[in-house]
Image (cartoon, rainbow, N blue to C red; front, top):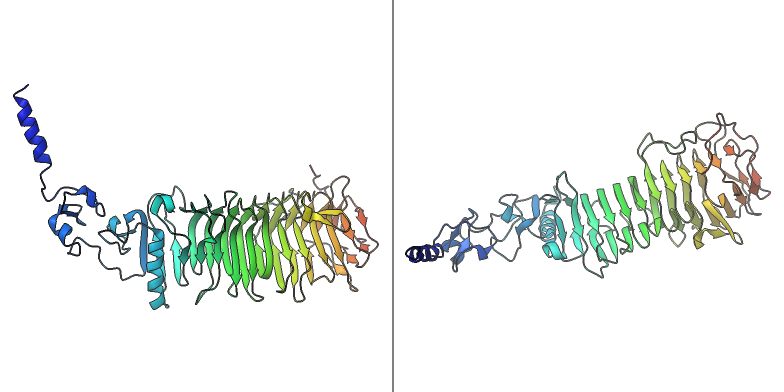
Length: 468
């Protein structure tokens, strides 16, 4: 055995000799002996150590329009100096922010085609701890950020630094991305105008973790498009729209949940729409199918807050339910505003928040219209049911009567189901409400106010479901 020791020691020494061709990982100089570098062929060599720009040692140029990001890629300050080409992996940007910056530079000179930043990896996570990101990330006009096609999970941006004004500044497009507010306290996605186009989010999830103030905030004159966007657990609004007068925000599908307020509008035009064909019916108790949901928030579901900028709200096929405040609250909208709520469900809101108070201490869990002069108002085909307090509250002043419901019984008739001990409708002494051609349970409904007109109610057969 003693005779073998010199042989073993000699073998160990031989393994440490600086021999070219040893296997390595591109971008990891520590894998190679001193003086050598790792080539794109995954082999150590003196050539790549001494001349990092030599052929085979440095990533090829990227002529666009796609720029790849991957946590397994390289940082721009390290060899092989990534350019965002898809292959080899070492030439992908290891930081998402670097890939977005490269795409923005390309889009600036290629306005006709734009650029794409595409994430790779199996459920990749980009954050301060994971990839050294610097927030906010900028998705410029003309740039589309597309998450990985991994079947396991969305690409994740983890906002693990605080405080931040915004995690992502959006002027372009985001697709298939999840944002986690691990430590950030500002806005998740701040959407505003770029040089061209409308900022868009498609299949995006924002989890505020009880830290982010706002999930998605839209400002400026361009509006935004949101398709299947889910926001939850924000301190204030899950969705905040504070845009210019003619700026339009279109929201289709998704949900705004478990936040301070589900949707807050301070200016601009907002259209909330559930998937086509999904309409609530009081005989199926209540919404039949999947829709856009504003549910489980600590205050109002939807709050319209009047200021200097007119507000236009359109709500269609939306479920507004289980909020601790009022389902929809409308406050002091300026001239030029309008509200339309159709084919939607407002149910099970508890009116427990301070914002649900109105009219000398009354509470309304369904809807409150609270302003001196009401805006143009359309309310048809809705289910308003099982809210605490008043189902509908109209605290306004108008010479002309407000009309809710259609001219004849049919699919545009509203259904109002009142909880035991609650009031169906409150009407202030300064306005009249024409509520004919609707369904009521019980019928006649309980109400307050001499200006309430409910005669010619629609017959209900069979009996509708009762409140829990």
